[in-house]
Length: 251
Image (tube, rainbow, N blue to C red; front, top):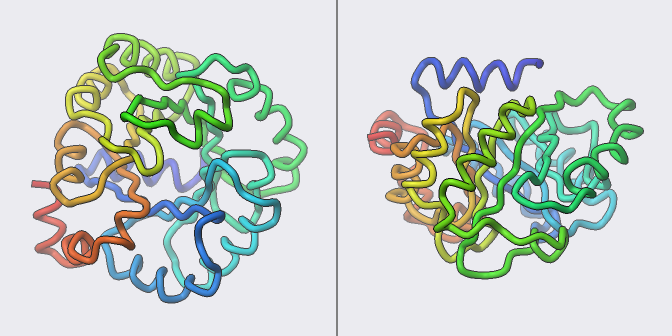
């Protein structure tokens, strides 16, 4: 592993909590990059994730290039398909949808990606991806043809996450999905974290500072926020880059 993964590990060891802002190329206007990224730069965000379930080819590369001009934060691809791979980014979450049983998203897409990855210098981070039921159908379900694990089947979620770790994944990502009605529960985060020896990412449905703090306090090492960051000015004010907000965020 290269620098980004090592930095994540070092941050966790130092008791730091990480925050990624997710940008979906299919839903983001390129002319907004400078203004939006300046806002990200004044927040406590530590990473920028770029990706979506359905994205036209080449859009990701153009977007990442523009983001790169406006920030020093690491840009990590969170791809829904191999067409979103671009060498303009710093790293790639090599996602395996271990909550589903569609072989295309367990190994098929990964094999397809290799011809592209050979031509890049991306840091590739194997990531076990678990879709957790949130009360509505998500784009991930539609694209992959898989169903999320129901929230009440907690032991299955725990066992799936642990199986991902034992298969060699370097990160586990618990995802409620874009626009989720409810985020992954604190109980699920806590019980999964107790089983793992690798970093835990949590995303989907986190729309305010209280939910953010709950995710951290339950065991999330890195939290991903998307639309809430740009839609809720109060949320943004609470996570601006200053000592007070950092203390409040992790209390």
